[in-house]
Picture (cartoon, rainbow, N blue to C red):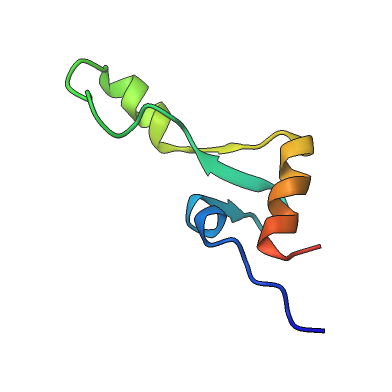
Length: 65
């Protein structure tokens, strides 16, 4: 049976931490940055952990167990 391919869109948007948590970027951090405060932009630049139900689906798309 052939190997399953990794979902390339998910691969670009998500990463898995060393402890196995699924990390994603915040939304609203790409444009209209002039009217957002510096503190808000710093907060948006950090990673956010995903919901446990969503992370199961994401891990399956990435091919990890």
